[in-house]
Length: 338
Ligand SMILES: [Zn+2]
Ligand SMILES: [Zn+2]
Image 1 (cartoon, rainbow, N blue to C red):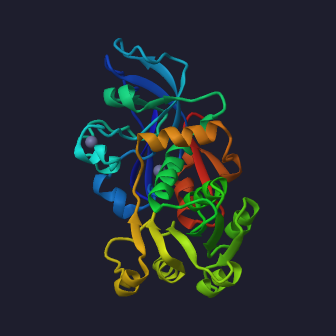
Image 2 (spheres, rainbow, N blue to C red):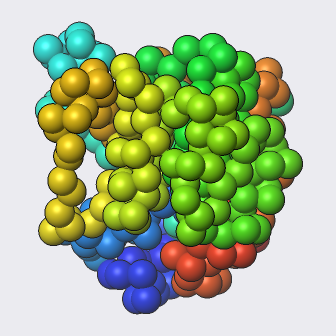
């Protein structure tokens, strides 16, 4: 079977490896669809574990179950979470699932034709796909779960104004969710193409990042700034916009962060007097995955319109380039068995 070995964004090699055999508590799955995530192309984040097989947004079909596996059967369609928290430690009890120190098993990368789901993930991290969720759509479960969590942490309420900086896949998911929640959404990006798309999926206002963003926001938003600002880009200029566009008592969410080594200066005295909160949001937890699946299964958010590319495993390098360039693509899905 084929896998893709990632060393960096310009060195991804297809390799032939023997078909793995699942142990008694494991199962072998065939990867049908696997999304390329913004975090996959983030070299500073991925390089410490390289070389590795990336891909954590998978929709897969069960091929073979170990003899102790009773919950699942071959032929079933599943999403498998990249890792599962213990749900018992102090962090988990306080819903800080992403920092649980007791994570044992990790999902092997999905940019491969097949993979073995480890025991811990068979037990806790596997979700049967409902009828209404296709394999391609299932690649949005994990990203949407991260978006669900970030918006909850931001305290965003119905009818509030939310500004989304960066209209890539995650920014657009934030936009779609904010509209479902009944909020006013302001989308900012440097790409007119992405802004045009943001408009078609419900953005109340779109602003090109090269314009005077705070002025444009206030003009379009009745003289008010945004109650919640969500950073979905690593561009430093966007952070400056975030500082200037948040309303008193509001919250700025770092959904994406700049590369390490880049200095970020917080106007803390100003924020102190305006009661502005700075929130980080990294990854998601089991309740967020459950909520994301529910949203997709009920069709509250459509995702098919965001899929711009479906590529075979052999074209994975092209896929990474499309996501890195951030011009002609929104969601790029690898179909390793196509
Ligand atoms: Zn992801
Ligand atoms: Zn834990």
